[in-house]
Length: 151
Image (cartoon, rainbow, N blue to C red; front, side, top):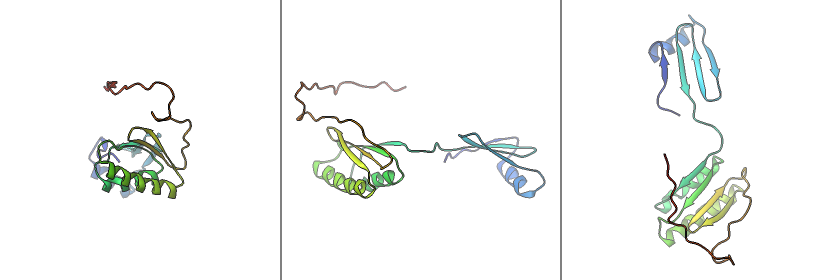
């Protein structure tokens, strides 16, 4: 939920009072992104958080963050986990915990790179496969120097 309410034509307490006073009629309009409350004198727009599944990118720093990953999966969100910031022992513990959560939720887990895992809930199907360097019979190139310029 956004912390700001956009209010036109008055303060929020006055608007809320006008809703419950019964002196004026209030109409609620939802345009897919926002809820718009309109009374005879005032209009208030409350931005809504986008609904639907999300893709969450996480870089856990400790095993204690494993539950956060499972919570995202419970909410039907896809999670990409980068384990390159934790020790090998912590990474194994995190994957053990997350694998159990994925199994319990009937989801899927796939290794997509060195220390990178894709976890999906049961409402997302993974198609295709990324082969590891060991499985590949073709030459493997190191492209770690490729960067994405974000605006």
